[in-house]
Image 1 (cartoon, rainbow, N blue to C red):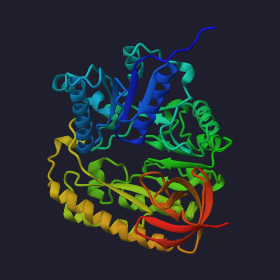
Image 2: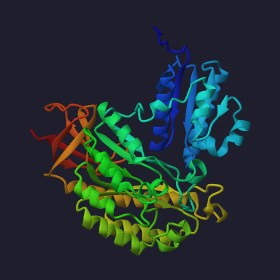
Image 3: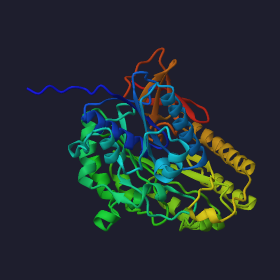
Image 4: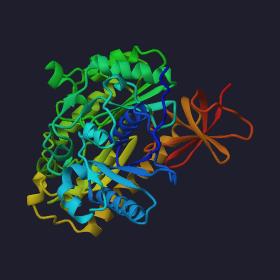
Length: 437
């Protein structure tokens, strides 16, 4: 009988950037373990003699973090603490030639779609039989499910198509298989992610097939929550909302980055939608799914954004009363359509506008949280931290949204389980409650 042996090399995978990068790292880890490597994820592990860094290249801050991480590990290699250093991901895809010149200590750089080449460099095979068998690095009761790769949009500020390529949907059957495997391992919540969620299926099926996919995933035994991230507002397929209203497994939650609300800035951003069209869409969404939690993201400081444009955005946020808002400051990215325009909003103005927008949203969030006092919400508990059990409601995605805190002194909940929680107090971005027996 053939005895399977673990290779003597040990690999540590470091992930930077978004949840889409995290899924890529999880797939890489699955392949490496399938090739008998011992692999850790983001650990300070002195036993790891090989390090793979999965980089982000989205905006300046993310690029700098990636570069700093590469330089730090290059120094460890020079000092003899690690033997091999490999870099993959978005930054490597976009700046490979420059990185090879500037940080030659790295043994090899690989792009976003070059996992087979990276595996080959490690004398490992790409095992197609492991597709759908992804090992997750998140908490065991939730996982991200990437339904497509790349993006066909032409937003002026965005370099994602340069790093991730054109939109490629994954087949429904493949995604359902992966969801079943995740559910068998105890996953109860799926976060659907893509650069452009609502474009799903146009390349494979010549039709927007996100509703079909949602029905198929909602039928998977063990999956109780399915959450939608990164929908595009222009030509939004309203039938998604019908599925959301019909299927209790689909969270009444939608993450739809709007980016701005001033028509001149929206046009400069090439967002293919106006402020009034956005208002109409938001009204339709709220009418079809009453009580839906809307999460959005805005970008301040785009070339040409005036103070009047920003005030229009600020008024729009006050008017719409979004449940969740994130804010980015514009980063002048070469090879994007906006790069030819002058980066004419000073850095301090970008920062000030971002601060004002988040200050307005903080007050909105507090009011909305206070309205929940006295109500009971189904809550999924993620962890125990200090004296609290920490969970989330249907309106909250991990890491980016509000949390529910339950004192552990007199109550007990099992991590990874759902429980009804009566909300007894509220802060800007946290809720306090007690478990209802």
